[in-house]
Image 1 (tube, rainbow, N blue to C red):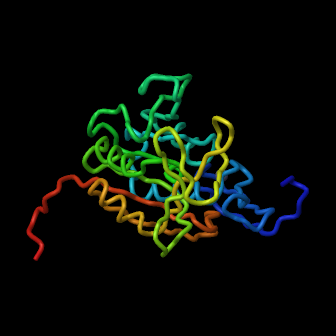
Image 2: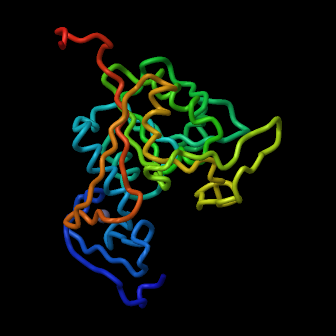
Length: 250
Ligand SMILES: [Zn+2]
């Protein structure tokens, strides 16, 4: 979509990821991928994620943040610039967990090398629709979060109120396809990532049953921040400070 294509929509406002007054322009009606900030190139879900981080974890600059498979723009770039304890990771099958590959730490979300209760904030952006064992990921997130820590993340909830549906699973060394193969773009590897699950709103139950943690779905629709598109819910999964209640709630 070149700059000469006429916009289908344009507005100005304040971009949460580059923290600037900007124009937001869409040159394609599929806003989710095309409603960009003309300053930083971010898309709506990235701006929604940044708003949720600012609202739910305002002390993120002082936090230990782990982000799996970060992007080169948007919230990833902002977090890397302003948080001194930001740890970006990517899964490199040929490297040992925990080692640095360039500036990127090697981590498999299904089996993290971080110690128990060592991370304040886990961030994932459109990653959990591509893993084969989401329950393991939810457990690993819960194990490694400090009490009071959070996983703030996006995943396309394409099934909305319908049940989540597995699209592919591992059987032995093979991938078994339960639905026609579907891929999203991937900044690494061969440039594409297989979609393994079509998630719905019941993802919150899956997370709870795997990890015991509660999750809020945050829907933001705010054109003044360039946030409008399909499937841009932000999930905020919280590890409580303690499992007890201070006062008995009748
Ligand atoms: Zn921006």
